[in-house]
Picture (cartoon, rainbow, N blue to C red):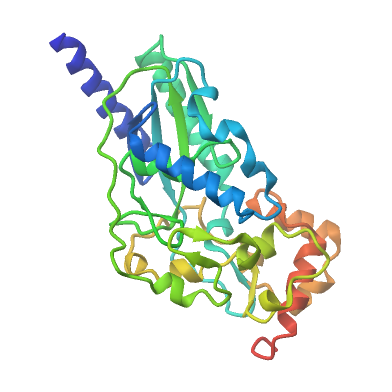
Length: 316
């Protein structure tokens, strides 16, 4: 019995260390089905959906999102990792692009690193089956990351870590191996409402709750309509792909370590987006968007977002 527990501790420690060695900033482990907070987060998701706060993001309604066990048979643990994407290089101030998307496509970056960890697992724990999940999978990502001790879900709905703020994206490996879980993180937002107070469109309708159809990031990335609502348009202030306002003002993001790797280095065209970009044809856009997560925003949407900003006197 003692040897079994010791082995679990040893392999759990090695697994998390391996994740850091692969280039992740954070790593933690949660047991499945998790603590009572997972049910609370699932109930919160239900309320968010029932209020239609997800707007046209219908994929959020997937039933599998509410039960991690449906993603891998006999799942017992989940490795949660955080990949820091903030780079010290800055883009210009004319048209703004969310920091999470300025470098390489984080989906591919995270998947590749987790695949390497999977190869290590195959050698260390041959009997363990595993499944990689990024944010395209139906998973309560931030809830499981919080459960594994990576950080806490802030009032702006982003996961926040004491040392690294919220400038990181998440990845997961669901495992059939029983491992030693980390302690779930407690919220450290306290009475701070800075993110709520600074959202120009009041998209954070209550602490921890984002109403998507009031969110600049939603409209610049997900909105497939030909025009952007007037209230959003009037508050774009340069944002053409995403929005970092609620993270930029967060006190936990005041001083965080950068990840100055090739993977996070902003693309040259992103740093120099300007009015002339309206003249790019679809092939030029396709060339620029290749290898980035920004390809989700179609060329006509980029032009729509740029034109919407040009209606704002502050941009001209």
